[in-house]
Length: 250
Length: 306
Image 1: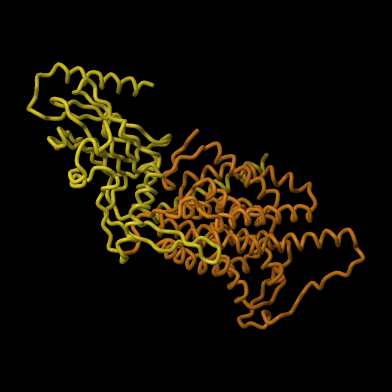
Image 2 (image 1 turned 180 degrees about the horizontal axis):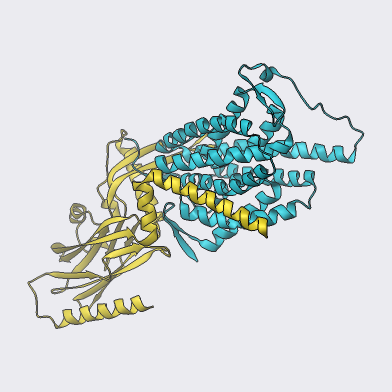
């Protein structure tokens, strides 16, 4: 429980400082995260980060979190002779591996669709490029399926009630990471809207990485694959031999 | 107690994995089989990516086979000459198999090929086992029935490169065990198994080896072939999860010892009928995943072909 308490204490301290601080430059946003590093270690079952901050004057706040971009392929199963087989596929280039939007109220009450589109706020508005040949309608079907599948894996999420504004100036929100969260650098962006217009944005980076033994094993498997294989064999041979010796004596 | 598996990139209960290893180890000890053909589908059922299940299981089979192979070696039940010919075939086959695996993974068909291989081979082997054991069981109750001939001479015995295998009392073409080795090696790479369930019947029925050396020689070959698969899967696909393999190994070595003690008290035919039924049940479960409409028709992968 200690880290949670400490995090809470730190949170309170920052909130207090923000309240007492003299008014900063007009329409600025101050943001911080409960941690800037999500560590995947032995007991990792997912994580939840706390995002908090303050604004100068009231307005609507939208938080977006974007994960590392990479080429992702989506495949559709088709029934061939009664059996489901992977058929057509589309590769979306540099698609965000993770994407979250949180706001204090529904997005259409905050800004016009054109503005949201330009800022790529909301998982339905993410730019997804593909060079896979195909008519626009089928690419659109794959695009929708991609976003739907990402949501099922909890890698894409939207929550328009998860951003709490306190006394018009302080705000806080959570950023949930499922156990299958991809490693890499994440970008947290906080937008401040007033009367449907964007007045300010603040970006904060965040890293998700494997730590400890898990990180060492993962890195070793990828950087020294041949040695990894040899060690895997050596461990198995020793374990099998050792088990034989123990049970022969018993 | 959740444990994060670094290569599978998922969290599973460590006690459940130990239990799974113990259960499969128990069955493999009782029936004298490797257990890979049970473990790989079970890992896939609990959500481990099929490619990781296959790569990791090859690693686990190395550990599961080595103590058995050593025990048989001490008792002189290994035909090394035969084992080495099978092993050369196994190296060729498993190297081909891993390349095929890497290619199929790239085009997004590996899960499908793994499932189809399981349905096909478990279906055939399970059905043969049940039929054969039921027949043997009836024969044992009715001893007056005529016995079958011990040796059949077919075109297989006319192949060139004849070699003498003293321990097996055989003088046959080296191409025969070499071919069996290649075939089993491909299966080992794609299915994440030792391949004993195909090799043992092939050694008895195709090669005509005496049953006393079959199991020891098969285990000897399996150790080397699964070691080769472990190495190549690590290098080509990075799909061997050492943490997962070790949890399964610890569970299975204990389970196997208990299973072996229970198995020695049961009658041979009954044990084989039971094993045949288990094999068919796993086959049916895998077949079900192929025909049932998936709840999501779409699946995601990283990278891929443009």
